[in-house]
Length: 362
Image (cartoon, rainbow, N blue to C red; front, top):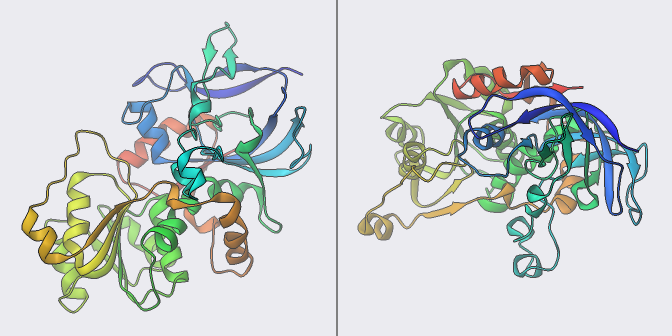
């Protein structure tokens, strides 16, 4: 049956979020209705609201969430009412070229659902589901392939972080950069994803883990997550990292900010023959330049990283085992628990470089 719920609506790019009532339709064939337990406030949501990333609007944002199945439509068999689920904002279609070669994180149709009308405001205005799942709402209706069962032993509110930050951070370390035991790792940006990268580097057995951020207040968070060293970002950061690593530079640098200057610094911080992985999502105006000679001379690898190069169906059970064993601590990443009306302030904190992950708790 249809339902009226509260949600954070983006009426237009650059407009402030409006907390208002929306009308969800009845659950249709191949759909699942979920009552949200929690939703993480990710930098990608901010990028959607300010136009760095484009989605159809008006829209309900939020893509990192977990909750309980309320109802399922015809043909849905992998979950049932009452089941705890993680929202998967980038489901693979299974039929495109990239899915066919096993690169499901690059699925050509992953975001096709964002163009659909999934709900309406109380006055009848059509709404789109942000990055497919519209997690900034008390309830949502999504395609069946946008939900995955929460692994046993994972608290539902913590499970929200599995939907983006953890999969992205863990995958950046284990699938993209492929950090090996004993290697040195420099992590740029200690937000939600950066904290997941730090924990994942520790799990991978990295030797030296250098965290870099603009905010001195992030040091305690970074060290708790696994950083052995902490640097305040400056014009001398690359030089400081080389000094910390015996003059060579880090074996791996992982950039979680999405700014040209940070990407360039991460590259400069990487040793000859090392790997630089860019996780942060920057705008088209962020131009990074390299000269041909340095590319030859340093022999480094520079790679992008989408969703941690992860396959959620494959990786969630692995992450769950790390969580149950105490190697991966989801709760420590959350520095603020808020309601829907706290999302704009959480966006401001991200812009100011404050805190780790803000979590909307319903």
